Structure formats: C-alpha cells, structure tokens
Length: 302
Image (cartoon, rainbow, N blue to C red):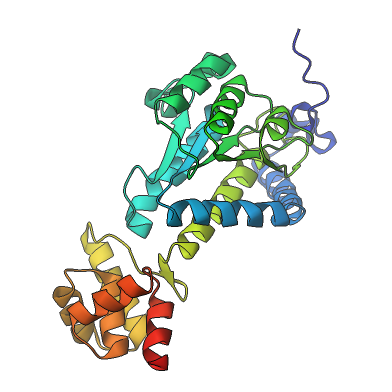
C-alpha cells in the first residue's frame, strides 16, 4: 500500500483540527494566516528558482520551448501559465506548453486516475518530440506523481534541462530532475487539499519562471509588456499606454507610431526613442535580438 504519512502535504494541521466548527470569519482568517507560510517557503528556494529562470530563458533564446507537466491541480496550474503567455508576451501557443494527465479535458473535469500512469506521461511528452533546447518542468505537490516521473525520464533521454516543483523535500520527482524546487508549505488547512497552500506556491514559482524567461527573451522593456498582443479594445488601449509610458509621448503619437509599426508595441517604442522610421526601428531591434534596451543603448553609443 502506498505510504503517504511522510509527506507534509498529507499531514493534519494542528491549527484547524476543529475546522468544521469554525465561523466563516475564522475560516477566512486561518486560511489567510496559513498563506503566509507560502512566501516563507519560497524564500528558501529562490536560488533554485533563479536557476530555472536562467535555463528557461536560454531555451527560449535558442528557439526551444518551456514544457510544463503535471496532474490534477498541478497540471492545471501549468496549463494556466502556458495559455497566458501568448497574449501577454506575444509568443506562439507552442512556445510554452502545458501537459496535464488525462488530456485537455482533465482541465475542467478531474481525471485523477490518469496521474498513476508513468507510461502516459512518457508518451504525452514524446508526442511533443522534445529536443535538447527545450526545458521540461514537472509539477506535483506530493512530489511522487508517476505521470510526471515518466515525462521527466523521457525529457532526460532527449537531453532537455529538467526541473521538478514539489512541496515535499527529497521528492521522487526531485530525484528524477536535474534541478529540484521544493518549497515546503506545511500541512494544509483542509488535510491533503494541495490546491490550497501547495498550489499557491506552485503558481508563484511558475509566475517567476515564465516571467523571468520572457525578460531574458526580450519580451519586456523596463517593467512593460512590449510584445503584448492587441486582440481586444482593452489591449489596444493598453498598447498605447505602454508606448506612452516607455517614451513619454502623447496618445496621438503612440497611436501613430503603432500604426506605422503594424501595431508592434516594441517597434513603436524603439521608433519613438530613436527618432527614426519604422523600418530603422525594426532593424535596430533585429540587431539587438529583440531587446529594446539594447537597441536604444547601441544607438546611443553609435
């Protein structure tokens, strides 16, 4: 029989032994207090997170992918981070990929039994034809999910950098991966419900990895999303606002620059900062490998 007693995520929280008798305010209060443990746990693993950011950035700059693999809540968090990257950073939908045990349908309807199949994890990753320039990040609160183990083994065979994110120390997936990120958030308010603190910690780590990688790939200037896709009215206004903040221009000037650059925010910013036309701005960005700051600094030094 599987022994889960050593996993901190499966232990009972002494502060919530009488949870079923708590008032709504007491429930909200204790859950908020326990969430403080998430930040403390992540503080202890920031060097490992930084290494994962470095590797993920290298993968993107080499034309590779960030591939998340998980089951249940962990898998959904990976998919969530992946699908938010294209509109935020202007990357294609196959640049950051989320695999979840049980397939896409498991995102909205739990398929808990699917996590027990290591061969399915291996097969699902193999279907993506992983290459050495990709980074594969396995996510499992328990740290033992067979689906994730199978995927990590396939990733290693392909020569990929491999990272494991678990909320128990010395996890199985941590042993399978090249790098283990293990923020220990402690027993949950609701025993074993890792969608709570563990899930929050995993989401924060994924936020750090994807955002940091996109910074490395030139998708950010200052703290602005300069490759944002303008797919609706809100994002069109945001694009103008970004150009205005980056260049201190008027809205009219921002709109004109965006029109000249085919709505390319990065190009519009570079054009206004360098005082050049759209073609020259795009050329400067190409020389700077897509980094606005590098393009501007190179122009200043010329």
